[in-house]
Image (cartoon, rainbow, N blue to C red; front, top):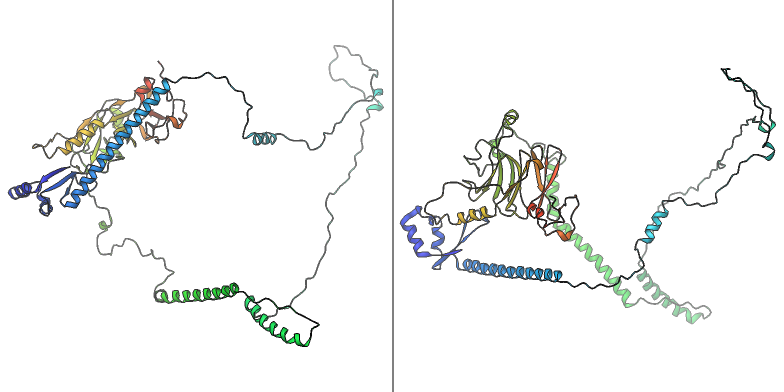
Length: 522
């Protein structure tokens, strides 16, 4: 933010006219009641422009107070971070200098909370016996053992079949007779019938009164009859029911008042909706309510107007004659934190045969970063030795951009210094007399994967892993104590049937600083 004096600006507008850059806001500057007005740079392009003009006293005070609050908050945040870093270093120093006391191990019985459930589950896997097993013993009688065996003689040169005559041994007589016998295991059935009683339908009515009113009337009548009969007869005495209490009478009155209020509310509601219901009924009489309401909707050549009026109109067109002319845009990705910043990847429009001829050759391609506030020329141009068909901004560290090349290699850019230089150049653009027409700054890749350790086909798509997910070299998810809420890994997929996971901290992994991710070999 910066304050400007009002008088010199108005004098410059009067001398230069429309050539003065302050001429579009001459009216607002003239209305400023103070001697100075405030100009603030809109770095996020919240209102679609690069600068904001504050020309009223309240607005200037509010913006200055806001700046003081933000500065105070930034100082508090810096102090908090310094305190956290000091606490972390102190804890690390205490951990390194910790003194461990060698105490004997105390053996305790193992107690499991799921012991009963585990025992029950194991028992369910076995078949339990509900009765004793039946045992059968099969043997030969003693008299059938030790019988003489009669063997026949045969020469060794005799070939062919041998007839074995049947032996008539009574102990081995296996002739059995068969008998057919049927058994039906079904319950006996019987056929019974019954006749229900027919009751003639009769219309009847009854009249009733509430119990409290009945008690009240019966108590008054009973008290009168009792006082009369007492003087005439003393042989029979009847105790009258107790009269209703004040609470019962109050409940009766409250219930009657509630019903009356409900009836009045219904009558009031009907009175209020009378006109709308009457209008709806009249509309139903004049309009076919069973007809499809969208049946007549559609494009008709006889309608007045042009069909182009229903199409969306183009607001802005981002075209660069040097990088993107007559080329195809294969991937588009929005900046995760900055509004109005978008990146596109540029590729040549070649056929399959043409790509086969130039395959294996190094051809510089580009990924262009556009900003809506400056749409005449791109903000940054990212170089790549091969055409990049897909790329993504890091969701937690937006200055890190990774992509996949036509050769199957993964590529990464670091835009930290380039974005700062572009922002500084945009802020100082009005101070320089000569505008730089050389175009956007070119950013070379920070790192690129080795061709032997990459995909064998073109990388078709890529995606960053969520901030709460990291995978080690064994393919296991890391526990929460190793996560810091940032995204370091991304996944790529290609036509070679592989899905690879990359980590942008490969230098720390190679130095052995992240053993929970992978341990360096060789």
